[in-house]
Amino acid sequence: SFGAGGQRLFVAQRPTLVDPLLSALRARLGLAMGKAKPVTTSKAKAKASSKATETPAAEEAEVEPTAEQIEARRIYTQRRDAMKWAKEKIDVVHAQVQESKKKGLSFDWLSMAHDFHEVRLTRFVKRLEEKTLDGVLDSLREGLEAYLTQCASGPDVDKDGFDYHRTIWDGVLQDGSSYTRKPETPESAAAIDKLKTWTVAKEADVTALVGEMAAHSASAGVQEAGLTKIGGLFSQQREGADMTGMTCEALMPAIERGMREHMVDPGVQRSGQAALRGLSMSPGQLGLMRDAKGIDLAVESLLAQYQDKEVCQAANGNFSAMAHAAGKNSPELATMRAAGVVEALCKVMGHHAWDQTLCGKIRVTLPFIQED
Image 1 (cartoon, rainbow, N blue to C red):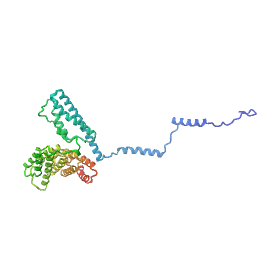
Image 2: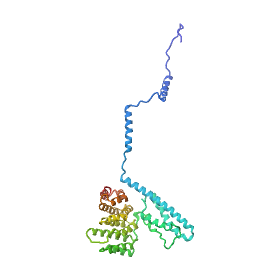
Image 3: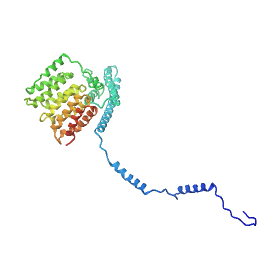
Image 4: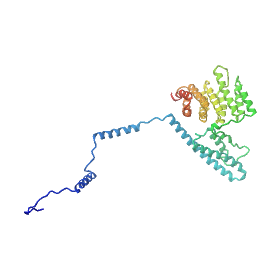
């Protein structure tokens, strides 16, 4: 502007709102272009460096799984394998049913026999999915395999000589709590009374005992009485009674038959565990019993009846006797581990956690099996 004499006057310009906005914009542009960098304090750098150093160490540290986790993993694998097996057998049964139907009405009896097993296999898979079954018993696996083998080459089989193998499903799809033992016949009742007073003076007496049990193999009561007597005879033998013929070769077939055919019966399994205990404590018999799959049979029995406290007590006593008879670094002890004795006992502890007496006895047994 100009004054009165024509002089040029310079007047300071008053700041406007545009200046702060331009300053802020320049600052933001400078950051975006990398002209200004955020300041990192030495404390923050040290913290970041410490965290980077600790992370790999934490990742490298491996935590040992607990016994419960190992058991849960084992049951998961067992159920998965059982389900795979059952579905494969359903396909085989279904294929054989279709093949027999192609042959016409003369093979309707075979289709009905196959339908019996197909229905139960389907229910078996459902129970596995519901987690109310933990796996497949060896007796069921072997029995169904024997049944299907009869028709492996086609449906042209002899009806008169055909084995339906229906008893392999007895108790499999039934809860242990709902099991009811079949009434004894007059013949089986007489055999039970006879076995209770059985004495052994010579090898022929042992052979006759095994024969008596085999003659009434369908009776759970006879098998329980026979297995109880075997356990009692071994107890007398340890006390000095002179008995010949009480060997694995003579007795193991009777023990195995009785336990496998009545796996759902807690009384038979309890007596069977006691018989196996007596056999394992007999000098020179544990190794033979191991070769005859007696250790695997004891584990299978316990897993089938782990809810029954008395079976668990008998099984724990059996495994304790086996471990002491085997000794450290023995093949028998290695077989016990491989057969799943530790996992089976842990399963019992998980189910009977409230029973401190039972769990305490199992805790005493476990170190003799786990440690060399």
